[in-house]
Length: 268
Ligand code: OOG
Ligand code: MG
Image (cartoon, rainbow, N blue to C red; front, side, top):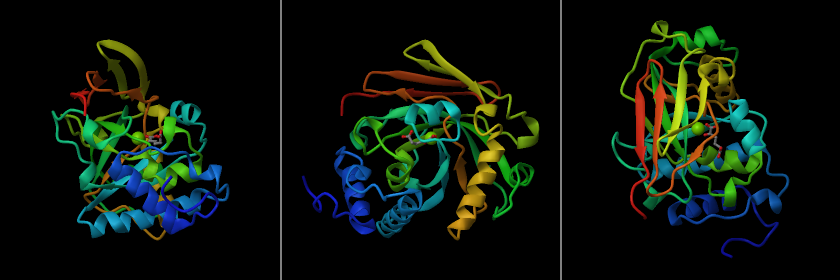
């Protein structure tokens, strides 16, 4: 296996290995098998180092994503608290494009409430109401997650280091000002290959997706960042994610925010 010997990992070598896995579509075992001390904050250091590398290679920082904000996600992944990761323009999937199988290892799709920020939001101490006051528009979205870890097996440290399994995302057809929606009651139906397999409302996400946004602002403040005007914020999967292999079709139907369709595309 490439990379330093087991137990010889540090922030720089884990960061380099994770970006290499991403670029080469190579999965691996979680680092915490060898380095149990890789905790959430160390994961954030690794994530930040790789953001720097993404920017150096020409990607643009366009926002943040939250991970594990719903009970459905926390229970499935076995990590019981939410965290934040970075979004760059390389992760934007154009509407109508298939799941980018050629770039991903084992993509899964999850429905998310997505915010476009009108104002800057800086923690600590941000409340849900303040957070919602800084939102310009609300969208339905599909995140295509892709862990660099085999079978999506990871701890909080592994997954924060891996930029929260970032892959790609696409937003739906309708953007509304937040005052026009009761987001806790905004529902989504998850349809795979023509069968509705799951459903949830916005309340699944920390009680209200605005709470997830506040959490992101407050967590980023700890790391010396704010959420900037114009940024996109993915507030976290409302349901468990569904597999999206070649040949599959996934549709996410939101009550007021329209439907998002994603074709699994041809074999990579
Ligand atoms: C971690 C990524 C979580 C979400 O919305 O909860 C995430 C994973 O499930 O692999 O993007
Ligand atoms: Mg997600």
